[in-house]
Image 1 (cartoon, rainbow, N blue to C red):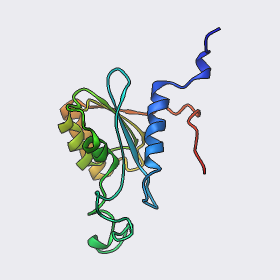
Image 2: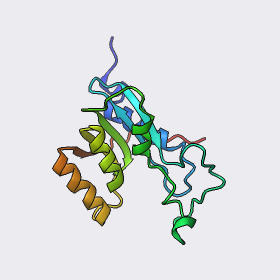
Image 3: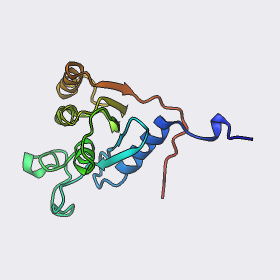
Image 4: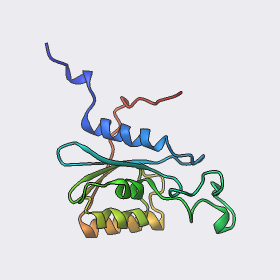
Length: 161
């Protein structure tokens, strides 16, 4: 008697779950984003979440979303996708797949393209239609990077402590 299909989750459910779990490491009070880079044979290569660069204290840099530029998080935070790319120590990411909880911004789209990642599976696209979101999609289209919305199955487990 083998396991039934409904007894285990799909690869997409697994990797998107890992991306969301990674995002829970972020100390950002408003937006926790996680990313997971996967090889063609379904091996996790790297993960990342949004946060300040190493050596930049979460207590000394701002998490605010509004105010003067240097009083907000935006000039300082490294996004989950870029962290996942930078965290990888194994060589080339050519042809890999990225699972991310929020559709990549235009700056992360550039890094994704340059790293050779060929597929992006995203959960939320809450900034759809904004200029930066349109720029990301335009670059992905031009570079041949597929972006696929994650199909929620309702089986992803929300972890509450």
